[in-house]
Length: 354
Ligand code: RAM
Image (cartoon, rainbow, N blue to C red; front, side, top):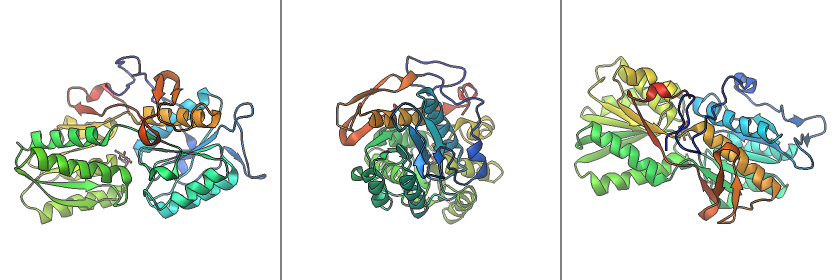
């Protein structure tokens, strides 16, 4: 399935959900917001009837275009069902920083927290305190261990995400030689799951490709840029870099673009079309993958609503309708799957705007 675009439609679920012109002013400050809550009483604002539709997105960190897009998708959904949207989050992708935001949201009594976890366990007890106080917890993008949340909205299977990245890099380097991974933060649940699966895929199907290093840019642009430079210095025979993070791949592409390695060292991974467009158009990068982050946020918001309504509890087989995306069924481990990753190339990148 193609991710939704502003110019294309593929199938019933591929609805354009990018939040369009409605810029979320809250994002501009780079710090927290309590726009959805009545801080004078500590009570959460309730959007509609007697249901507590005060829903707050808590990304890994603010200032990441990927989460700007996913959370706008969430805002669109929450507006559709008459709830109150907010976004809060740390400046850097760190679990301890997420804990203080979770605690504040628990005190405020929000209806749901929708979080991309910086760590699978470190935020667990804070999340369980929120749940004990009546707040629904939905993870999206990056999960916690299942006992700390009510639902996980998964963008695509780890197998699917790992396979597309390994297929792309191995094709780009002629299926032989040294590759390295530039990841997000070392504890990120999503990247770590994908890396484990990529290692298995490489070992099983690409005997002439060697993974020589895995480094972490912490989803920080400058750190990712510097780690790219260091990788290329310490591995002179490197033929390819896989960066399974939108921050990492954009920073690595920027480094490669003006370096002696442009066209010699391949780069692929997960990126947003808007951040990667120039690098694809000038040949620094030939292909990369992603899903539609706006759809992910939109689906997560409807998942939170279904939990608040009591339509679902997270049991396997539970069903709910996610607005324009249609009906979804809860799978194993209270997980809901959005779809499949999509490959962006010079031929199609102009069709996408997120
Ligand atoms: C970054 C984040 C996010 C991940 C994407 C692909 O924006 O690490 O968690 O899903 O990349």
